Length: 173
Image (cartoon, rainbow, N blue to C red; front, side, top):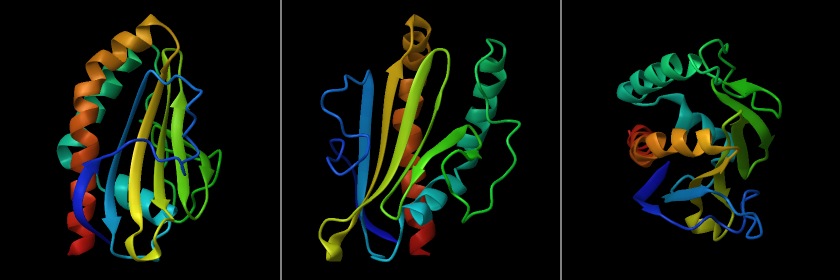
């Protein structure tokens, strides 16, 4: 469970994605305090991505229909993965699992236009106030990636906090 407010925070140094020498084209992180100190990053990733608001699903279906016309990857043909089976190389919808540990799961995809990674991190700081941090980093492969993300960015900044709030509400119930 989480408690407290969702806050925009810098990319945490404890994340695998933290690399000051890498010039990401876009990066953001959102954080909330965990009240369940036993939650692992795998649990948090399933809770975060498991039940997106219906409107997010509608937007993703629209996105998939549109980008498939340009030969970009979609998550439409992916089979569901059992909840506890997160391992590198597996795909969960649009996301490929790059690494999974008790403290951090890295998901993402590389495409012709851009590469992105999402980190779901249970920050192992103070045990009494562990934080859940969801971070996204994007690297453009070319000008099309820049154009694509120009249109996606406003939705991303709404969707991620909305999914975080929904997760908090579900876990508190």
